[in-house]
Amino acid sequence: MRHHLHAYKVRSIKSAFIKNSIPLPSFHSTARHHYWASIWCCKMSGTDEVAASPQLHDYTHLKQLSEEQKAELKRLEQVEPPAGSPGYRVIDNQPSAKLLSGYSIPLVGLGTWKSAKGEVGAAVATALRMGYRHIDCARVYQNEHEVGEALSAVLAEGVVRREEVFVTSKLWNSDHEPARVEAACRKSMEDLRVSYLDLYLMHWPVTGNTGPEVLPPLADTWAAMEALVDKGLVRTIGVSNFSIKKLERLMTSARIKPAVVQVESHPYWRNEALRGWCAERGIHLTAYSPLGSPDSATIVKRAEDTPTPLREALVAEVASKMGKDAGQVLIRWALQRGTSALPKSVKPERIRSNLDVFDWEIPADLYDKLSHLPHQQRMVDGNFWINPAGPYRTLQDLWDE
Image 1 (tube, rainbow, N blue to C red):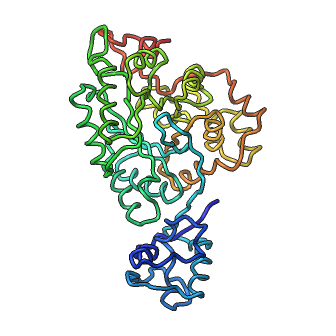
Image 2: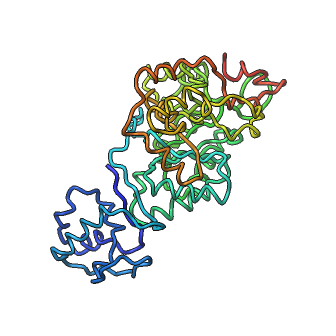
Image 3: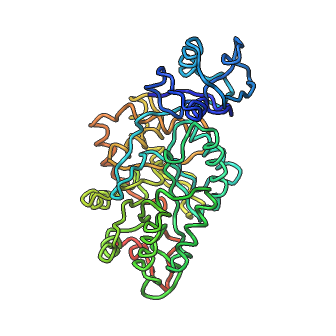
């Protein structure tokens, strides 16, 4: 169920009731408590219309709502916000997956890779106000401080609580030395303005060294990440861009199993073997670039005319039949496979539509066709880590294929 709320910065009526030990009005017994922080307040002051910039009221000493005020507040909760106002959309019972760590990960998150400075903060704030509760970040994206500013600003509005937002960051290649891992994690936490991370991933099985083996060993880096969980800095740990072989090797000495594996996945690169392997072990798979990463060609040195699932004829056919757009079809396909997905956008309309994927399904026959497209190609193949001096001399070395 979706609700639209206004984020006017008034003191929380609910907080006033709690402060003064007053029972909360019964009309709100079925609503989620964070709605209180952003209810329209003009009627509370006796006006007949909602102003564009309402007066701020101090409800610190509020003792009682009249029956008329209770009814008005209940009605206002259901009203669409006027054009141009900072509205909220809250999606109750948003689908999530239970992780080996015991925590849950929302199935659709906002990706922040390639989001430019000056844009990513607005995108994060928009996403949170439109119902997203999962933000995927990384130190190497060089925008975590801006993400943190946006997250802090939205949380201060009182509608969204920190514990409702699943925040991911990633350990970069240059910080694999065990003595550097905690400092790197704390730097991301500082930039993101959080006291813990919901998920911390080893970004790549790469450290930048040359020679026959990755040094420091990935197992040593993983042990340092396990210590982050012990200290309460991180709730869940996992890896990104790992092959089955590398995961098996890591797990031989792991005290805490990776709970999440984040890899590229879409109909043009299904990563089916890895998905099945993870499912058998209760490891959750998150799909990055679920739309095929159409804007990364220059970054990863991919030909501009490379086929992309966004332009796949079958995707267009499904979108037409379902009354959806291609992006929604690709995200919904990822969810029906049992994975989470991280679409990236800085456009408000696209951010919103990418989350409108929970109340419909791709029919079984069309889903099956999407799951058997013959064209298979990584869009982010890791070619930038290939070095004749090792440890990955070929893409086959990197992906163990």
